[in-house]
Structures are given as C-alpha cells and as structure tokens.
Image (cartoon, rainbow, N blue to C red):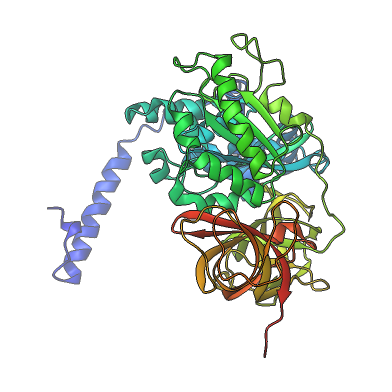
Length: 559
C-alpha cells in the first residue's frame, strides 16, 4: 500500500514521505528530452475542420478568455461569429447545426440534446419572425392513430429535427424492438412515454413555413389522459384529428368509448373552429391507398362531426397520408392518384388568417409553471399584448408581477401578440403561489373571478339522471376544479331555444338546461358573450365527458 494513502503516525514521518516524493520527481524530470524538436501547429487545419474552430472561438468569446496562438483580437473573433450567424443554415447532417448560441451550442452537443437544435435555426432571423402569424395546431385522435409519428415526421420534413438525431432514435428504437416508434420520439421526450409508446403529457414543438409559424401541441390519445388533452386543445387555433385507416383500428377509435368521438367533441368545446382530418396509415397492406376505405371512413365521420357542431362545407377538410413514410405531408405522391388537393403542410400554409384581439385586455391563462432563476410560467396569450418590464396582475390572488423576460417558442422577444405560446419570467411572485388555471391580466382591466355562475349545459353522455347536488370536475380554459350543480333553473328546447316555465327536478342525456354551478375554490372565468375562450367548459365524471356548456352569468358572492 502506498504510504501516501494512509494517515501518518507522526508529522516527522509525513516529512519523510514528502522528501521521497521530491527525490522521485527530480529523477523523472532529469529523464526528459530537452532537445526535442518544437511542436509546429498545422496552419491549414482550420480549413478542414472550420466548424469546430468556429464553435471553439465562440466558446472563447463567451468566456472572454485571452486569445492564444495567432494574436487575433476579440473584435476579429466577434466578426467571425457574426459571419457564422449570417452564413446559410448548414445541412441536416452537418454537425455545426447551431453556432448562433455560442457556448450553449457546445454544451448541447456534449449533452446530445438534439431536440433543442431547432431553436437555433430560428434565432438568425429576428426581423422576419414577427411578420409570420403564429398558429397553434393540436393533434388529437384515438390512441395509436399516429399523432406523435406525424408530428415527428413534420419536424423532420421542415428541418427542425436533424437526420442524425432521427438515425440515433431509430437505432435506439430497434434495440427495443420498436423500430416504427422512432419518429414519435422527437415529441415524446419522456423515458416513460418512449418505453410504453404512449404520449402522457402534451408534447410541444414548432415548425415554420413560408408564411406562418406553427406550434405543434401533441395531445395524448389514451382515455386516462383526457384532462391533459383538454389543456392542449384549449391553447389551439386549429385541430388535426388523426384517424387510422387500418382495418379494425378506425372502428375501435370511432365506436362508443373510442377517443376519436370524444376528442372531436372536446376540441369543438375548447373553441377550435377548423378541423383537418388526416386519414393516416394509408400505406398499410390492408389499405394500400384504397379510395373505398378512405370514403368509408369519411362517410362514418361526417354525420358525427356535423352533430358535434362542425360545418362539413367550411370547417372540415379530409386528407389521406402516411405518417411513417411522410407521404402527402409535404409533397404529393404518385400512389394516390385520386387525391388532387394540397399536401398537409402547404394546406396549413394556405389557410386564412385568424382574427386576433390585439387591442383588448391582456388575458394569459397559465398552463404550467416552474422555477428557473426566478418564477417561469407558460401559456398562450389569448388577447392583448405583453411587453418586457410590463406590470401585470395575477388573478385570482391579485399579485402584482413584473415581466423580466419574454420567450416566444424559445426565442427571446420584447413584445408578444395574441396567439403566441409564451414563456414568461416573472418578478414579485413565488412559484408556489401560482396554479395552472390562473390568469395574467393588466391592472386596468382585471378578469372576473368567483365561485358561483349560471351556465347553459348540454348533457352528452350520462346513464342516470342528474339532480341538484351532483358533483363533477369542471375544465374551463386551463383550469381544473371540482364543481357542484346547486340548482336546475330551466330546460331549453334544442330546436326552438324556448325555456321551460317550471324548474326541472332532473335532467337526463341529450337534454339542454340552464343550471347554477358552484366551484370548490375561486376560479377565473368570463361570460361566453364577453370572452368566448374563458366562457366555455366541459364537465367530466368517472373518466367520461358528461356535459359541455357555456357561462351565461357570474353570480356575485354574498358577504
């Protein structure tokens, strides 16, 4: 055992050990070849591995380290970084896909966080970013219809995920005997989601086309995670209902208890006006781009969607595709001669613009929050505009907060307009004091909050009758709260809209009524007439959506 590894019995003994070490070091130095030729660096090496030099230079620039070997000034290096940013984007396979973030880019390479690389491609174009309209697209549908795979394929086709990243996912998926799942891993970043092949939380990603900037919200298809799906749909402007054309799979999703029906209805309740139906898995051997199968799916879906409230002529658009091969997502395909419309991404680009309330009051329902050098909140700005250093009020607990920084889809900006998915760093409030469902407002025009309200409710699916005293879970914008029906006021005739003169003692399936509801805690809400996004809600019980409704009147609290 080396004497250095043990505690000495006395100080003299330790000095002996030091003396021995010094003698050994002296003899080792004496053996060095001091007449060796000096090392001359290869000056042409930079042209061979220029991307690495640029990244290293940026790294030095970030850390403000002194410049060695070459005597260049820091100003020279700043110019080099600038030209690196101005360069055309490197190809998908090029390792230097993200020089614009300097030191952070190197850290990402070390950690192999390729999912974050898309962010870097947006940063060099700040002047064009505000001109593009922000559109939030939610992917909904039955479990295993192919929502995450289509999302991953779109990100690859638009250059947001690099080819080498997907190749890495493909290798990892093959090791687990799940080779067809690799595209969904671009959105399912959680290990549990990857192992089971089921999305649990709403995945977020974004891509850009010539005219628009899209945020993908990848909703879970499993019936256990419908509350997460409602949260995703409440942030969306446009929904993409993915259905599987494979024999048996479409029928499972569409029959009672399947998520195709429930998701379409929840999307409509969440305020989604336009629905694109992607008939996926058309390349499957049981389908083989068959027009008959496509029309069969269409015929079954249209009557149901009409019943939910979508207008088949204006609001619905059907499209065949294959998520795994990417067929008909970006470019048209030869196998499908009978489909003459635009492929999916060009179709999204050609959609008319959405009406946004830019001059209205600030309303930002909070989806999520966490700690990161302060309190960070996530949400979609529904109306008004938010700027850096602006003073806002968090409702319903009336905390005054200040916006420290503002990120729109991971890109820092000074101002945000409605429709953008934002990440705000706030000052003046702790993370524990915020709950999902709280609303960020401007002090001049606060949103309403309360516990009791009157609402018009449509009972969609409930086996027995519903009487006053019935408890359910209320989903309104991003808020989830327990609610009780305290009184039934009147029944509403579905066809004529006439209200009954007498109070009903109960309501049952397919009936419409006006009822008074009382929440367990104070929530933020508005009447449907004043602000539709915060006036629509769903009632759920025992894992099923039992009713949808709209807020008619807020009842003030009695002191």
